[in-house]
Image (tube, rainbow, N blue to C red):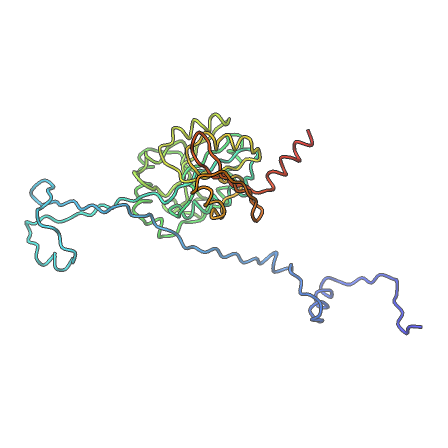
Length: 323
């Protein structure tokens, strides 16, 4: 007979005693969730940001007493040698830099789409607007506009000085003030007006600049027909489109009607190398890799790529089974 007798009566101990007991015996696993994890959660995001890509640099020559005129002499590359050799009558070059877009992306957020995920990625683009594949324009369904605005204002933080002091962003602010445009900005108590991420209502980027602007334009829609019309009027050439809509049929309708070639549905960062070969070789292909459905197909003679999580398919089948 065993010398150990286990009592069936339950033992009540305090939370502090339980925590001390756990840490006293190292064989027991350390809890993953404790008080500090919930109440003292440290969240440090990298603040590395991108600057606009330079398209070209133009030099305009102006003299003090005459109209702008380009001299026959080619300007020297060395500033010191140039300044020492130029006389007061020689024209002084004024440099104008033109910038280009870095693969701008269009985002479409529908009322039944995952607004939490969409806002998460949109906030990244707001704080790093010149990054590759950053969202440049947002089409938002009108029914969720109020909820969207409430969520966005709480997520906006001051921009990095690299962006807020960049000539592109400064000129955009000046242009917005001239147009008296309606915008969504951060809380003025915590976010300065001249360094706030910004969404601009009902304007295209060409009204603000010839290249990147540092802000995201916002257009609302009611039906999918409105989305098609908005995209047709948009002068900016988007590299890719990100659609947040649980109805795959509606999303694929936009794929067929839109001009861009890359579409991500209910996802944002995906590895396009998995479907690059069929796309480049111009043949149809469909595969499932790491939980994503990759597809290469043609619409009206244009080869396009569509990627979406596999769960989107099963969610649709489940909804259909309930009808």
